[in-house]
Image (cartoon, rainbow, N blue to C red; front, top):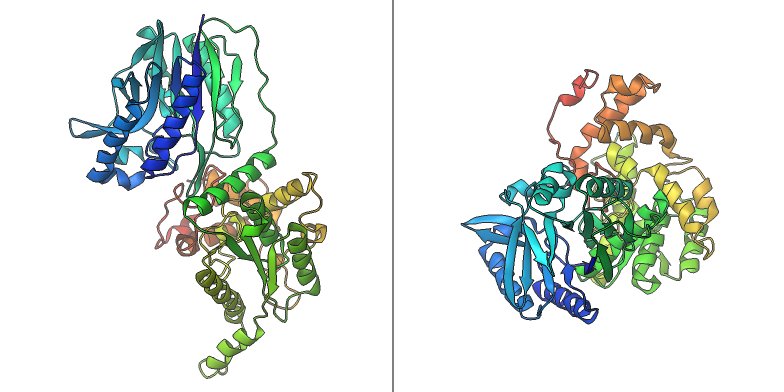
Length: 542
């Protein structure tokens, strides 16, 4: 005994009703052609996820109702389950709408509304309280939405009401370890409920969030029977068994670096395309951050849509210019050099009276960075191409970046990527079999901002392996200075790093959005005050 199901792992765009309606209708037509009994869409697929404060606009919700009417006309005999926000008694719910033969059959309202990390659903929705078990060709199917499957209660209630299988609509954002968590959870839930489970997830990117797809299905014995590709849209037809399946699948294997790299590529691709930019440009310095950023951009958009600018100064090493030029040739992007010496000198001359008698310091270093920022933003404005910022999470964490200089840009692909992972991803990209994309010397030489003679990053920061370890514990695990130091790190170094993180909140508030890959990214995940004296109490236990 089984049921034929299509899982629609699609890539909607927030607020683009025309586009999203067509995606949904095309998927329904494909499922009908497959003679499937039902089609399952992801959470809030009609509006895109997350629609955020668009949900407060009455006209937006009216468009939802109109769109559902258009979709209902093509359903015919296939049971269509769509994620959508719906009003009921003047309260808004995150719903699964069941449509068949042009009519709404059932409405299920999400019972558990996540309100942690990137989620803010209690701001918009009222929680549902009732289960929903529908009949599909004589089989009882319980509906759940995303967070509901992570809790025991909703599945238990659905089974108590007769569910033989659970269909779950999801908008589950990517992070590096999420795949393993999902597989373990769904296996446990299918075993605990003695039900098959079908899990449909969004694919695509929305601002800092990336949805990796990887829709799944398990039989009642906890065996994996279906796994959709990661980071690829598609409509997948499968059999949902109501007994133990004859054959189980082995979960698809991928490395952490592969998953993260693919997420970064998709994040850049969708941000650029969904916002209507014709292409991107970036400052290519000969360093590893800009090198990796360009590799990602080319893989996301094609070389013809990427432009790189080297902006040398008196402190720029010859090997930096050589390596930047080499990578640009290898990847086939448009490349040019524009020296910043005349621009820098103009700024310094204009300020000479104001700075008379004062020693050179970080001010002059920042003028170099801001000279580059002015050039890049001017070209972005004139050519209409979006500027990519190239900074990484380690730099953003401690403020090792210049406002209105190297932080300039519309999107920052590496914003949630620690420096040590930047090296791992660069080596991964070079391992893909299409040659040495990032010059080996870029990976092996000591990192430097090249804003002063013989400068290297370790003049200002701890070694990156130590810095990143401390940052992970402080930012992602909420460990205090004393707790981190007890693990063997020098107390003075830990306290300095923690202070830098808190002192530089003002910079991060002014930074471009970037792809979220960790469980505590700078952005929706982290909401700290700019004005705070908490840093003076970091050594206390938290």
